[in-house]
Image 1 (tube, rainbow, N blue to C red):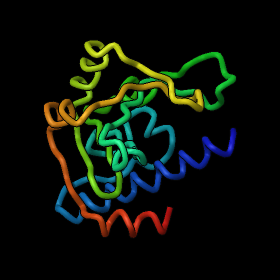
Image 2 (spheres, rainbow, N blue to C red):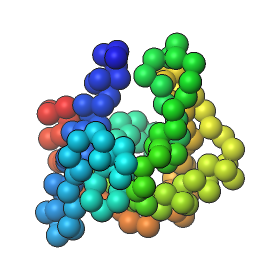
Image 3 (cartoon, rainbow, N blue to C red):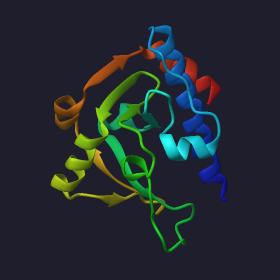
Length: 158
């Protein structure tokens, strides 16, 4: 396992914990599944939601919707992930420490088929498509803005 993969996984887990805590503070009944096996089978949370951190969202305004991954660029086989993961989640939550958006997994899968614009990131370890601001507004079923203070505080801990 390479260091970049490990770092991204740690960042993702920290973000999941942050989102769950923010939602619980708002009265949403939600918890993270404990253990990798439960997450792979059911998704990240008891609310049947997969949670992804998009560290470039504030700079680009686009959300990167992941569809496949590899641990190393030299690996030959892409593993379905993100919206295409084999887990049984219904909701896909994505954002950063300031903005968070929830989408129906089915709507994002449909968007992938219609858009037909899957790209591979420069590092060669993740594939997905960019959800532009206009499509984000059209497809989001729920969103939260937690403020710039949340972003600044979270960046200190990550």
